[in-house]
Length: 165
Image (cartoon, rainbow, N blue to C red; front, side, top):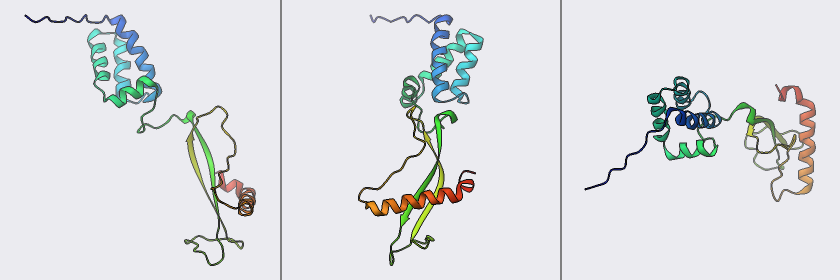
């Protein structure tokens, strides 16, 4: 004779507590527009045992990587970060192309410099995010670095209104 394990069905109150916590985590990771978030939110409004059980089962039926993201507070790669977590940056890139070098189709100034710009977004990962960040490729000579930094400053001074539109 085999023993059957009888599992006690959770009470609506227990499910409301569990799903309430899960709802907040879903909002933080997947957002309010996610169908699972909406399902759990609706089940919490009704407090109906059947609806609460269905919502819990829907979460438990998610792929492991989604459950892990939600339970650990990580955003899946496919979700769009919240606007308040993003910083917008004006990204400037500069090159110095020597005489006789391939210009790769770029228009250089009279000194052989190219400065390109674009707006980018990056996730906030520190409360002390810099206002300006400079990256210099390893092995770039000091004199070339200084010339390009000066060119970038001149470019920003001359084109500020156009760059930040």
